[in-house]
Image (cartoon, rainbow, N blue to C red; front, side, top):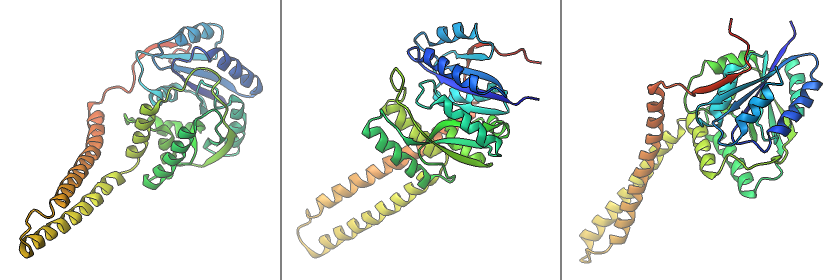
Length: 314
């Protein structure tokens, strides 16, 4: 039987770029003559005309599938929905903004056929991005690797090809706070990096403002490490030691001098420091407890409103 490729494209408010994305994917499809293909677009509750454009294009392309969420559930959840729906022997994840060139997928397929189960794109250049984003992204991956129990490749996004074996393992991982690139690293198998030059966004704006970037980084760190909890213990011990020094200093001043007001500044600093540490540690605990709470509710990861172009289930 001919091998089958599934390409998953999450979308959110991408009406300005959808036409060009479809054109570039069609050019890529013309290059892959020895594989069956399906293109799964997951509309993550877009507020613009993204879904209407996708549905109109699907009516003319039998290889195209569209999944429309009932609301915005987030990029990583949209990626998950595409993985769940994919039927290919290999599954590729690529964003609709064309920063990750579809033409690179051909190189991924070649490496996959050479025996690799995961081929992940490594960004060697990121034009069009601010210095702040470049610096914070670089720092994030390095901090994540220091904290994570699982090594995660540096400077990689979700742009990757995965073998069916890897996809089946991912589908068996129902966690709510998802960090897909970390989950793929956790799975294991034979993985290889493919360096490529990232392009600027073709149109539109980034869907990851600072608030979402911080939340995404938090998901990455807390989902793959308990070291923040261990760090809170270390900070607590350090603050206790400093508090002990303050107590000893206070006793010495009280017993050896008549100026009993001395040391009030140190005491105030110690109180504020310990209070700050306590709030920090409670916050870390709260993040982990919140994730436990989300898991035990057992709600579905996403709600599908439209599912168009898929073959009937047997």
